[in-house]
Length: 547
Image (cartoon, rainbow, N blue to C red; front, side, top):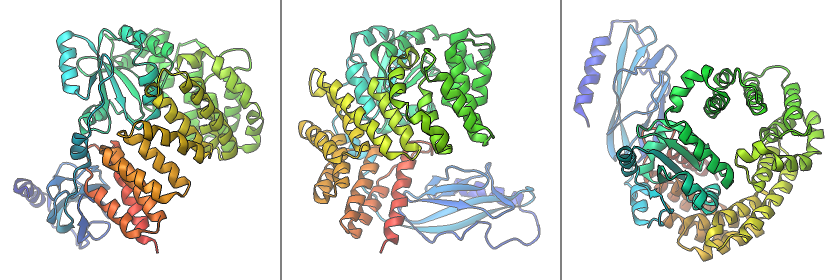
């Protein structure tokens, strides 16, 4: 226990404590727990009229609390035995402060760390040609020494678009030539060493490709897969902006040219700051700028629940769906799905024209510049239909996407150059409800590449859908042994689901508790580790409540 922190907390408590009126025996919203499991995250709240003091220590055993706000905070207990908790609370008028102090008995012993242990034992694949792999500090030193930009590839081995980019773009001479003036580094986001930059740049979708200067100031980012021509053009554009990081550009949007305004607007839209995006676009005159403005208007209206949203969807769909001979815009796919969910009768006519829309999107210059492959358009249409509650229509487009990915995979030079395309094919087959076909694709990948956990993990999920539980459990266990980091937590969640499907509640509970004990939660609660951990915790609660 850190007695210096304890002393500071007590001094603060005595300094603030005033002889106010009688208060409740505890200021916590609920009585503190007497016990907790190792690595469990416990939430605390306060009663009305009080708040956690952000300027005083909040101590949870060997660690400080995290996600601290006035109304709540979280503790994670990483050591066993009696753990002292000290929480500093003040009334909302700041006339009286006190320290809640209690002990939580933490049960359990640590499992092998999923991040540090397993990741260290799993051999890395060779880096891509021209890339450093999982050495961010070395890449930054090189960029500073050589006065170059950084090209950062945030990827996951389980991520089909990440693998597609490796196979169809990042290994091509055109890309290597366009990025020759940059220090290229790939970061496996399931390894702990990637956390600092994932947190710094607020990376949430994968793959994300980010160009930054040697001071780690963002120049630009690209999220998702893309075609070679569009991606190479984007890389070249980043050299143009090397002297104007995005943080500088946002303060000068009013005087930027058309391309600069669009760049800033897209940055704000990625951050879901719709008002700033629209402000950045003032004075821009291209059709694409008008499309971005329309997208920001819709997002603002959606968030506020504004009247007339149905009419707005219809107006913008018809303006930007390409029926007038101009470029169709990719957002139309999501707008149709949202309209169908909001007003099914109004959305029905647009559903009847989806095949024609898909064709216009595949021919659109703007869509090509955004990097869409032809199958990607079909999967996005499927996603929009699924979101709208139209699973049968979504299944049709997923099936067509699967066929399109299979055709591209068939043209690849080797099985190793078609992994991502086959993963995308199988994922679309799962979306189409064709589980037997998906399982066959995953089985072939697992047989060809037995040391790669993503194929065993996905095969286990397909077998679970098919209710082939013993085979699914075997694949999930193999994937768990080969995986590490956040994805290992997800694999173990799948394993527990399979065990519950086999009516083995004791095994499922053991799997979930061991997974939670092996989780290493980073300080930044927005990192995906916390979401994976919460998924385990939620499912454990469900399992323990089951008959």
